[in-house]
Every structure is written in structure tokens, then in C-alpha cells.
Amino acid sequence: MVRSALCGGGGCSVYRFIQQSATSPSLSLSLPVSLLSSCSVPLPCSLLSLLAVHAVRTCEIVGLGNTQDQREGKKKDDSSERSDRGGEDMDKGKCTWSSWRGQVVDLLHWRDLKQSGLVFGSVLLLLFSLTQFSVVSVIAYLALAVLSATVSFRIYKSVLQAVQKTDEGHPFKAYLEVEIALSADQISKYVDKTQLYINTTMKELRRLFLVQDLVDSIKFAVLMWLLTYVGALFNGLTLLILAVVSMFSVPVVYEKYQTQIDQYFGLVRTQVNSIMGKIREKVPGAKKKE
Image (cartoon, rainbow, N blue to C red; front, side, top):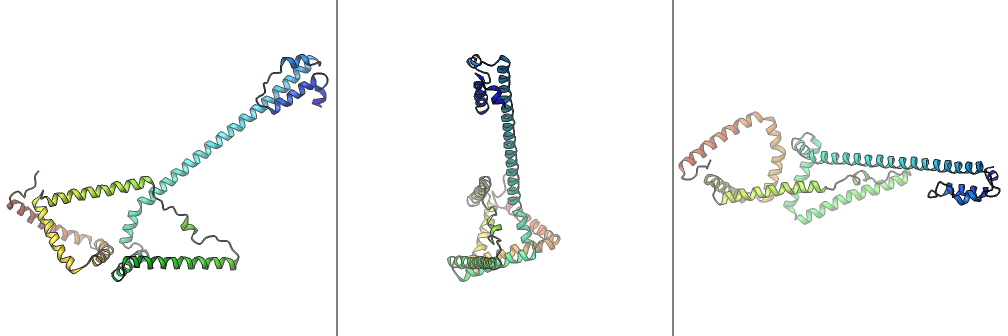
């Protein structure tokens, strides 16, 4: 109906311009002067055509504007969601790496008997194996044992899924999705701590060997002399086994008898400090500079 009303003489030109305006966003909103002059239809018809063009373009502009606003709003929502998710991941990472000390303390204090017993037994078994076999052999046998267990379990789950006609996926999927990578900040943090410990140790050794404090150097010499007897009785692996046993036993004993142990250690510390004070008074140049 619109085409039949506009066609006739120059009206078809107006109708064609409406179609071009509706399909071309870059087309001007105003009718060319040559188009109006070529129309043989009355002037009101041309004005109505012009209004129709403006109405079509106005609706188009409004629709495009709303669509653009919706897209921008969606982008903002997506970016804010990613930021929140990233913040949660960072917090989760911080919580994971900040709680490992508490887990070690709980492990050494036997809060969970099964977990502590499993770790303690595994470490002792590994150390005793090192006393009988070389390090390469122990690592190879350990890797073969783990691979045998994982491959057997994978094959068993695959056969079970084929028989039951289920699709449970990879049996170790939960462990494969666990994030184990260290961030650059975490690596830098631990490298800085290691550097601090190394520098402190080097400064302390320099102080002891160059006799900055005579009494401290004598105490260090006595300690090294005692270690010569320890080294004659035990090798490195035996000392490591004793250290592991002490790590899993001393915290429990100290937690149970903390009051008595602190009392005895206080008495021993007082006696040692008294003896060291007397030595500093009698040995020339042994007094600490204040």
C-alpha cells in the first residue's frame, strides 16, 4: 500500500529513497533537492515521505543505541565478574600457601593420627631404603611402584565403565585439575627469604671464624669437637633418621610436659649464662662491647 501510494511520477523515487535510508545507516536523513523537484506528486505527499524517512531512521538510531548500550553493559558485567573471580583466586592462593605452616604443625603434633602415621612411616621407610640401596635405585623403584598403582587403577576404572556402560570420565580428573603452579610473587617471596637466611648464615660464620667474640668462638669450637664424636658413631642417614623421629616425637612430649621442661631449661640456661659470664670476666678481651 505504501509503495502504491508513493509511486506515480516521482513518488517511486521517494519510495526508493525510503528503502535506501532503511538499509544504509550512513545515508543522510534529508531528501535531496533534486528528488523533491523531480516529484510530480503534491507537496504534502513529499512532506509525508520525508517524515516517513525520518521516522524510519529515528527508530533505527534508537535501536542501534540501545543495542550498543546493552553490549557495553554486558562487557562491563563480564569484566567485573572476571575481576571478582580473579580476586577470589588470588585470595584462595594466598590462603593455600599461608596455611601450609599450620598443616605442618598439625602433622608433627599428631592432630590426625592416620595422616601423621602415614607420613611418618613413609619417610622412615624411604630413609631405611636409602641405607640399603642407592639414591637412584630408590627413586626408580618408588616411581615404578606409583606408576603400577595408577596404571592399574586407570585400567580397572576403564573396564568397569565399559561393563557398566557409564561415562564417569578420567578417575584422576579431580587431581589433574588441581592448580600446583607457583606464581611469580610467591617465587620472589621465597627466594628473598632464602637469600636472607644465606646472608645471615655467612655473616655469623664470618663472625665465629674471625673471633669477633672470643666466648662465642670457643663455644662453636666445643660444638664442632663434640660433632666429631657424633660423626664417628653415626653416619648422615642415621642422623637424618634420628632427626625425623625427634621431629615427630619431641613436639608431642613438649606439649604434654611443657611446664616441667620449661622449668628445667630455665635452670640450665641460668647456669650456662652464669658460667659464660665468669669466663668473660676472667679471659682478657672476652667481654662483649656495648
